[in-house]
View 1 (spheres, rainbow, N blue to C red):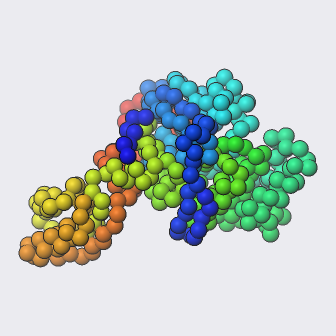
View 2: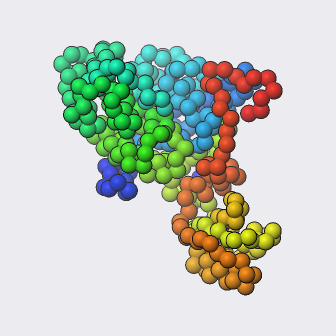
View 3: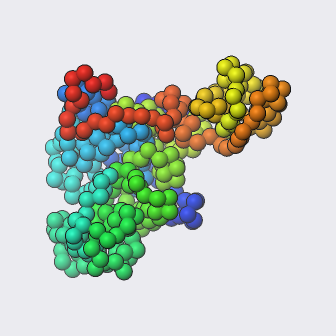
Length: 356
């Protein structure tokens, strides 16, 4: 499958079944050549994509890549510099109120009122969206059960754990029954168990409510498990877009060997590149190398043999299939987990002399 470079209920805690999206489904989101500038700094640079109804679509990239700025434009929070975005058929620049009625938005920061109870937070939000009283009570009851907070409905929000507060935020964003759900870094700051719980909950909610979901994340496993399609964003540009499976298939080499050596010689990377079936080698640090190969078994044998012959001890070695981390390296030239990005305020351009 060719990768476009330009342009479900869970069954366990570690395995998710993604709902298929009909090929002829209508577009819930249409973004065309969208640009956002803050002074001379371009935060989003000519990005285009579409999201089908019923799809879980992911924007994957490091902090500072432009993901949150994209969501803020699509959800009418900041104006678009150039291009357009249509949400459920509504142009967000020309029909912002109509667009807002169709969406639920969960920002990265936890924003529920800490002094109110769980139920009070949901009630206030429902009133802001003019949800009728009868429907409001039914919706809140259903959502409390869905996010497993019924027992804590009278608890003050400040007494909840981080994972529970995130579940409350998700329930709050759904209280007016939106068609499209935006989540900005939904599991940042959560422990691994809470992250998996949120993934399971989102998959169940999406299936039951027939939602279209757009999430931003810098977690490879989150994008891989949740999303039908993924757009990789880097420095404000869209560098690749396809299903997780197709993106991984687009990377040369079917296996990844992570191996750490004790005191390898200076030319060790070149020797690894010369092994048969090896397609690329990344020298990470402290004698650690990431080797992509079309034949994991053969390369492992050759690699260990070369190390023994050269008297270079192998400290650790693992073999795995290609991951989204390898995809990110393939299209951007560096690893997502090692990316160091300066923080920019989405409200202000960088100061003179600062480098993006």
